[in-house]
Each structure stands twice: as structure tokens, then as C-alpha cells.
Image 1 (cartoon, rainbow, N blue to C red):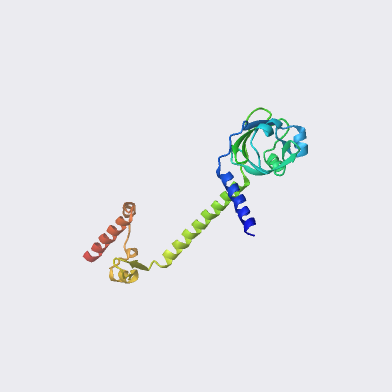
Image 2: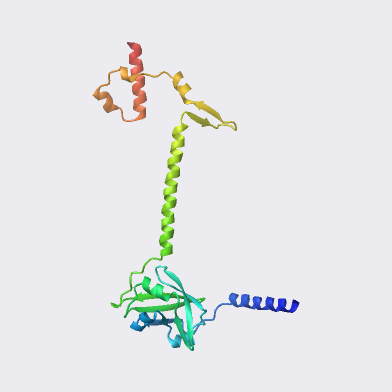
Length: 224
């Protein structure tokens, strides 16, 4: 039991050390591929044999990513000395509408990961589709914005309901000021009983003007 445990620890440690070691730079780190009718029919893409011989050692799953951030994991199929992109490739090809004559440029980034640039039959780079994952995330963000708006509306309703009582926290103890009592103590002027002319209305542009107008009416009423 002790021997097997030690050997297991050694193998795990060796694998960990390999992951820490920088990946050696391959003799080839890029290749080009033209989409043929057979590529579409077989729903797989063969990696050039020279890249397989001189390029990096690929794991059973590789990652390919476009300049737009569309990323997919592709399973590798090995047949003798041949290496193919298999599971996941058909989905990637369909998402980018790959057809006969499309030209693909693959650049190896390391850790079995490729960056691919795609050109159509006119030799121009295509308009890359967005990843569905990104679209879903943006929808979630919109939902968050809606929730935030709803929260603000609820807060405004609560403020309106509790407007008659305002908390004053000048010290540690909070006292409540009753606005209704304050309004009772403050003399109010019933402006409906007074005659308001068009000239008076034109002069009222703000709350300050309204207060001044009330004071003027009060003085006018007292003098009469």
C-alpha cells in the first residue's frame, strides 16, 4: 500500500511539473487550410501532415477561437499518422457558414489552443458571428438593469408613502419631524380666495417666486 501510494504521488508530481514547465516552441506554429467539398461532406477537417510532424504535440481536445471571441472545443481524431478536427468542428463550420473555397489561417497560441482567421471566396475576411454565450450574458445584463429600475421605483414609492415623517439624525438618537404639525403652526394663505392676474402668473417661474407671492398676498390681506 505504501509503495503504490508513493508511486502515485511521484506520477502526480511529475505531471504537475510538466504543466509548470513552459511549452517548447514548435518548429511550425501555423498552417493554412482551404475548405474543399470533401471537408464539408465528411464534417471533419484534416490537419496538414507536415504540421502534425513538426508542429506542437496536441492533446485529445483543442480549442479554436476567432478574432470575435467565438470559441469552441474540438475533439481530435487520430487515424495512423493523420490528425483530424472531428467532434465540434461541424458546429463551428455551420456557425461560420463555411463553404467550398473558404480559406482558414490557423495560428497556434499554446496549450492546444488555436486562433483562426477566416476568409471567404473573395479573399476578404468574413464578418464573424458572436458567440451565443456572449449574447446570453448580455440578456442577463438587461434583466439586471430592469431589476435595478424596479428597485428604484419601489424606493420612490416608499419615499412618497413616508413623506409625512422625515428622520433627522443630527445626533445618535433619531427624532421624527411631523410635517403636518409644522404646516399647522405655519400660517397658510389660501390663494384661491385671491384674484390672480395673468401678469402674476407670468412672474411665477420657481418655488421661490411662489413663496414670495404668498408673502405678498399675506401682506395685502393684512393691509385690507
